[in-house]
Length: 176
Image (cartoon, rainbow, N blue to C red; front, side, top):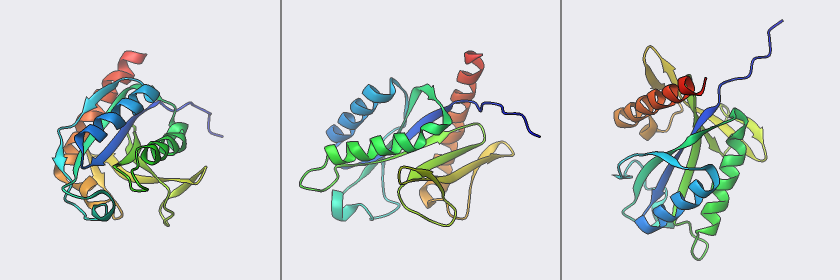
């Protein structure tokens, strides 16, 4: 029989897609008010992997990733997604989102996105939220899977998650 061992806490990472930088800053402020200080912000990059959000949000779209300093219990993912969906609603104008917030949790082993969309490979967490295993860490780097969104499998985002993993690993060592 296996022993019950509590897993390490995780780092919350959020992708923010937006057109208006002031809306992005507002979303970051509201999330940091809820989750605590941000300890990582990626550079702003064009979001040109898909035009999925253009009819709702306009163009050109930009993206930034943020991560929070505080570490959280692994069972936080559904609540984090429900909060991010609430913020999207609060920040909507005339029923259209001004930001798209995609939160996930980073561990030493993987990165898991939260989603409301059911697919064969996604695990139901409860509260109408699913977990999407997006990246796995093997042989010294994150790797994408056959269902990973194309942008998350790009070299730049893989490198960013590798750097975030190093930051997170240091946090775990300092926590002990």
